[in-house]
Length: 73
View 1 (cartoon, rainbow, N blue to C red):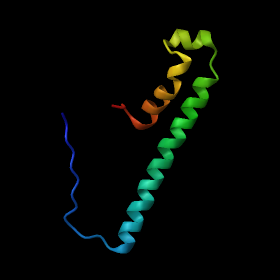
View 2: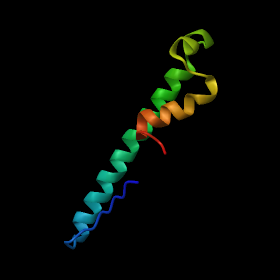
View 3: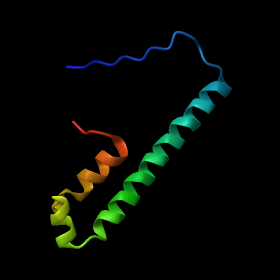
């Protein structure tokens, strides 16, 4: 089992915290755009094309989540 811990040893100023929040929000927005675009493209495929890729329509959201946010679980 992997364990990740993130501790900050320095105190950030208000402006630095705002910049970090902005960066985190930008990363989250980019990942969400990847999710939406991937899901949109997968949903546009026909059943035959999905079968060729080894995908089932019920798994499209999971595939899009993995593409945007990495391996889940």
